[in-house]
Image 1 (cartoon, helix red, strand yellow):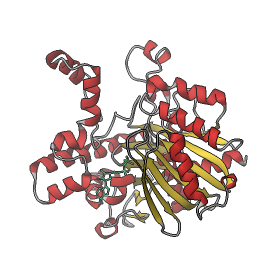
Image 2: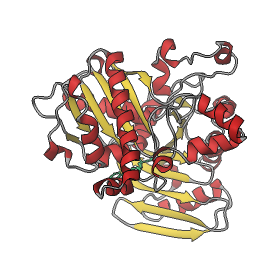
Image 3: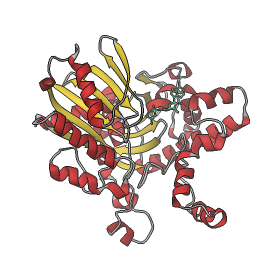
Length: 395
Ligand code: ADP
């Protein structure tokens, strides 16, 4: 069964066509700069063919139509071979707590989440409507990044602010990267040959955006991101945890307004802000090797926050069976993994430096003496979305 996975942004569409349940990727790519004077479509197929088109894509529908042309050129004979579409939806708010079949009401409910996620909601709604229009009559499934975290208990998702702000404004912790955390936690259980219900796992999704989740018995019980993907770890350009008074202080002393503060903490902070050089972990790692104080400063903050969250979640879980590193940095940075793990002695973590010298591969890092299994597990959000779509349409 061929399933198309779509991830629509404001000017982009990322797509993958998968054969399910095998999970084979038949084609993938992305359309960028939709609505701009020149767009780019990059398309790759399973046989290693790569096509790059520089064309104007006035709308998301125009971009997707072009993708369908490319798919029909060798990957499928007809669009009717696509039997379902799985959509990545970043925020489901409090109402959309589970993967679901998309109806008009669901599109409306996603639209209602707008105040909580103005960045993604319009693009998702657009993507859902375009898929309905271009592929009429086939099921569309929405998979929410927030739904895995709906099991977090009230005392962990509430902020200590007036309760009315939760009941009326829905201000609470929602978390993010849920599809990824769930995917690697399930894979961890498979690799350990155990029922996930019997395991406590800490999953570290470290990419441009980073978050850590405490997973008990297969359910998220706490996660570092909050109302938005800003809270928690130090990220590429996001500040993560910060005393909220820093914002009121800057508002008063520098006259910064809400939009300026938003820009400061989302786009100018994190590794970029601390190093004043780069948001790219690779660049800063090189700097660390060369003894550059700015790179060392930024990476020290980055690594320390991870250690701090793992420590906190070890206490939340009471026992840790496994720690998983995933996403761009988690999968590819032996340096970050080593710096983090060397501070986890209290948990009995011991990793083998040779095993840790790996990039983008599933691998066990911990030694036989380690009290906790430590693994690198590459995430695959598209496959997770395709799996959930397949399960739902076949249920
Ligand atoms: P996102 O999906 O959130 O955009 P990714 O998961 O792709 O992010 O991760 C991007 C990050 O991964 C960047 O900070 C990049 O520096 C880092 N990264 C990629 N490859 C390496 C590497 N070999 N060593 C260290 N960091 C890496």
